Image 1 (cartoon, rainbow, N blue to C red):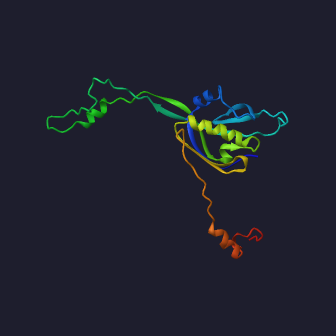
Image 2: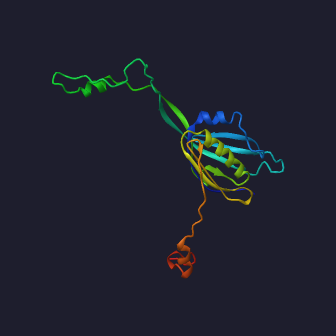
Image 3: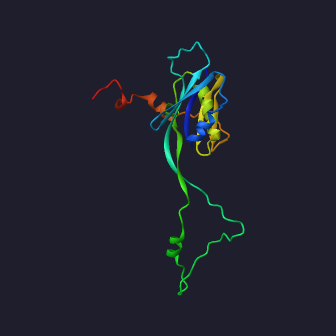
Length: 201
């Protein structure tokens, strides 16, 4: 069975983009559909198994995101014919009137946009073991349409370890380094009486 290890995500994208993505998603063959539920400021996307032998009471893998509001400012495009260089007015003494310039500046138009934030480790973002790897593949597709955030993970499809790294919507090279922890050797040489679970205070 394919598994997912060491997942970490900082993905952010507009909530509307998430709904648009699931209007016509290209799902793994083991997932028939997804159920999207919103509970207050939490978005839960659950896998619906294509395998009828899996009981409907079996918890399937789900993606979990927090929903927050961000203020998005519109960019005002200037006419190409106009001089885009700043013009500073000066007083009779020859000094720039910065205060007058600040008063003339208007705040650009903005709106509050709801964002889905898939942030945290595996237990926070990807929950339950049934169809876990398949829902991870769905998360990867979400990461590819997200303009902001990073998704990293170590997966084990077909008994081979693979590293995944997607940054700001683009796949990046990734590798796995196996490092021995020297503390393991230190612990094996003696008993750590301070942390021994069989000794109570």
